[in-house]
Amino acid sequence: MLQRIYKSINESGTDEAGRGCLAGPVTAAAVVLPENFTNDLLNDSKLLSHKSRNILRPIIESGCTNFGVAHIHPQEIDNINILNAAIFAMHKAIGQLPIPPKFIIVDGNRFHPYKEIPHECIIKGDSKYMSIAAASVLAKTYRDAYMEVLHEEYPMYNWKKNKGYPTKEHREAIRKYGITKYHRRSFRQLPEVMTTKLLLNSK
Image 1: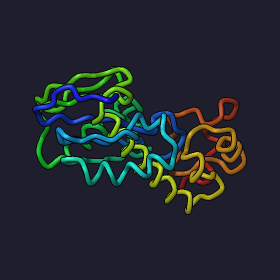
Image 2: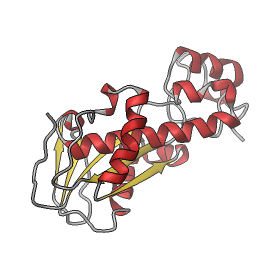
Image 3: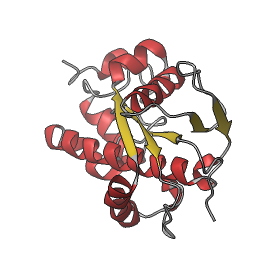
Image 4: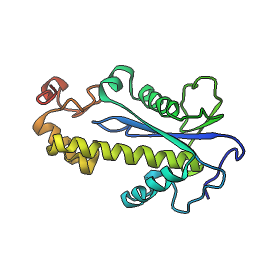
């Protein structure tokens, strides 16, 4: 059963989605849950089906105390690297909370302090703590929805299905069509091809 660390304080969980993608943003969410929040379906978003995540999204949004979601886009990812971009996305999501949390719990083992708010990094926190699991669901569903919009502009990459991850289908499309303005140029799109040969759609 998922838990809380502190039941009596304003505790925000935060997590991100999309770190390993070749295209699109890295997206983070921050969620504060009320003390009495429970949901038997809630879990790490990676362990849930697409249908379950979409069922949970409105439940989390309506049942939480407050939440924030933020995207960091490919150009900035390329400028500051994916780890810093993921942490920056979490900071931006926390910054959207109307009332600053008293404590932050973070999925994973890397985080930069946010203002003077104490925090704790928790390996596999999205499968242990409710607010991190809720943040993982919002980050994933918001990012998936964003990639479905981008798919309409570049349907040949089938982002509505692969969401920008390095699937065989996605890489075959990169080999055929080149990269777009939504691809991360600091990532190795095709190991055997020079990036400068993949700029067909990048303007």
